[in-house]
Length: 114
Image (cartoon, helix red, strand yellow):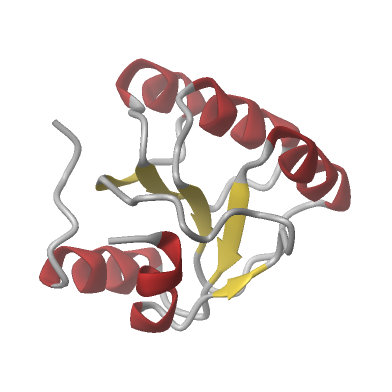
């Protein structure tokens, strides 16, 4: 499944217009503790977090994640979005809760991380 395929499932909008929506989403994850995500992140991961600062982009880029998903229409800081564009990290915003996003992704066949 690609980023462009999960977007309608979670009512998401892309906030990094230059992002590659053809990237494969290989697994999903939700966590707000950056050190934990650094230790458990994976390539192709769709990461749901309420964190909005630049370190989120650094962790997503480190693991070559598919995308970062902001639940509840949370807006990421402009500086973070600029860094996401520079690093090629796709950031999505969804009006849904993190719980609902993960449930919908799981129901659509996006597996948990390995």
